[in-house]
Length: 460
Ligand code: 5GP
Ligand code: SF4
Ligand code: MG
Image 1 (cartoon, protein in one colour):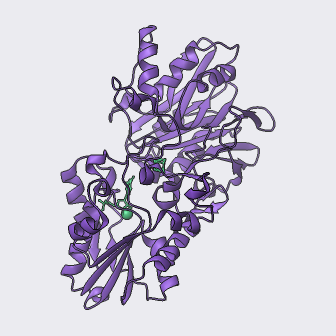
Image 2 (spheres, helix red, strand yellow; image 1 turned 90 degrees about the horizontal axis):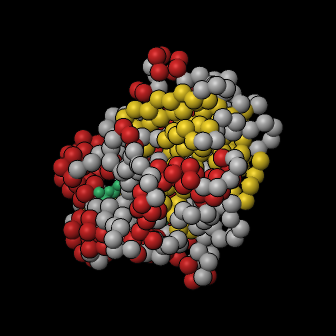
Image 3 (spheres, protein in one colour; image 1 turned 90 degrees about the vertical axis):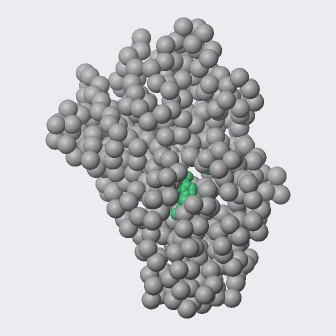
């Protein structure tokens, strides 16, 4: 998902819509904006794309206010229902409270059951509503203290942007698994999941919100509150590999540069004899550029992507996914015919895309197909807000690398090693005992408790 917040701009909603548009890659299922105009909260939420929802004059004219928060939804928990679309809003005893959440709580089901036992009535099936109930029932004389009370009870990954009648509040979980950045536009202050949301409106990037930090935008300069001490940091390495936009900078590292560096490292680790490096567009492009640079092999766009098809992975249902990949990619015959091709992609999840693409490249007359993947094999599900499927559907959880190579019908297959990945990111490897990243979908080493999962009565 994507979150956005702005405080101190007369046209907050228009900027929220722009920011959410730049963050569309983080979720295409639904979008919402809540504004505060000094008197009232105004909200609009809808299933669909930002550009379609917030281009309506009727919708935008109602979203008045100097403060706004927004959200793009990519469903990980909860169904595709309008009542699950964020930002959530509640009239609490201390005033209105709106909340947008990127990430996933790992004890939401457990907390929810406790809250329901105490009489809470839930309106949605999303884990984010747990926050609202925890805040509503927390002690504390103001909403910020109540938020701190609620935060002490949740586990998992969360970048939050919240709004009260006098502040816009950003929070990152203790390990900083999901991203959140602070920006400035004239007198206004902003939060966004990624810096590309600041670029679109000419706002200035100020800094990343720290893991375990709350930043309050109200009168004057932003106020920083430490929610948790500790300086362990476990940012999601998959954001660098796939999820974030390549033109974003996270924790001081350009996502594009990171992807290229991973591609270079991959070429150093396993370079086949070949004539040509071809990216699987679009997500494989930066890694393929790095691979070509390091290997000195020519680089060509041997596969062309149709940009008018959404991300195949996100469309629900295997049949649509199967159809989606045919709609989305076509082989560029003159580039591929008679060539030994290295196909570079960022990751293999179910293997559906990869299999079809290999078939297509072979059918076009490539003599050999070597696949190189800019991430280690994905063996475990993500419980922190990225929609990796169950283990049963993860190809690398079911098969060895050799079996995957056979399944995909490639002449050779290699994934970047875990050490290679950390090396490419310029960080000490896992054997340092202090990995800088969450890499649980590749290692099964989850950096937080997984309370819901440990408790057999509350499957996630
Ligand atoms: P597969 O071949 O496993 O079916 O799909 C792999 C492709 O899916 C890769 O090109 C990768 O870019 C993309 N992908 C990997 N993880 C995700 C994800 O979490 N969401 C979406 N939308 N696409 C993903
Ligand atoms: Fe990111 Fe994987 Fe960790 Fe999920 S499990 S937060 S996708 S590194
Ligand atoms: Mg891809």
